[in-house]
Amino acid sequence: MKTLEQKIIQNIYLTETKNYIGKILLFAVVAAVGLLFGTILYNQLIEQRTLDMLQIFQEDGSVIRIYLSQVLSDVYYETPKIPLYLSLFSVIFIIILLLIFIRNFRRIKKVIRSLLKFWTTTYEK
Image (cartoon, rainbow, N blue to C red; front, side, top):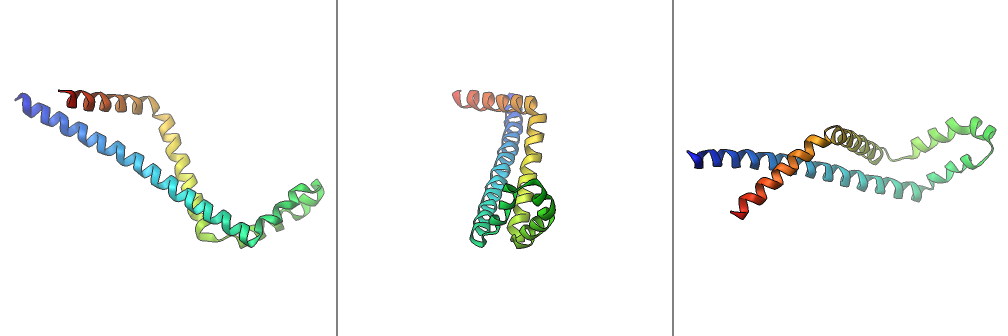
């Protein structure tokens, strides 16, 4: 009976460990994809010299007010759309995951501590 209980507990801890490792890997993959597409987008904007149009923000306030919408629309239309949308999606997804992490920090800390305690005591026997 005791070995059955130990097997059940070990399966529960194994499942929880897989879930948390999966969540961590998902976060890492999304962050890497966002960083990759953000870098690609930035390099393409530099090659097209699109960012040079943003020099208008160094001008006087009245000049900015007059040409702001035109400059921003030109920057938007010259930006490659797929890397832009993927970068924005990745950033939004990472922000959502970070907010969830911050909101559930105490619970996550307890679960990780419990998992570490279980796996370290299991292999010490």
